[in-house]
Image (cartoon, rainbow, N blue to C red; front, side, top):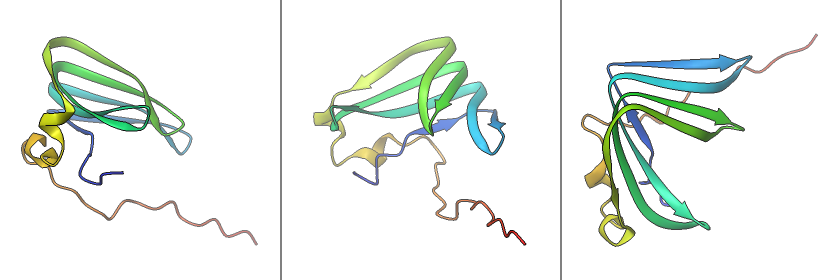
Length: 110
């Protein structure tokens, strides 16, 4: 997998919904923007840029299951030939990556 192909989401407010200890839904509200790198049969297939008043992502088994755009501005699809090797040119403004993801604490049974 290409490590520079990072789906991104931004907005004025982002809300994360948890079900027990699992992320189940993400809402981006107010000036919501997203980029999603597309794959067809495990092959890279360009990316989609979307803008909306609100973007709702429902997750299942840790993956986006449904994406709903409310008050959407027509998005853009960029074919793979224009994306390959230029992925970071499409990143959302002010994107930064942190490699210090939170880790689930180890449960110690006594």
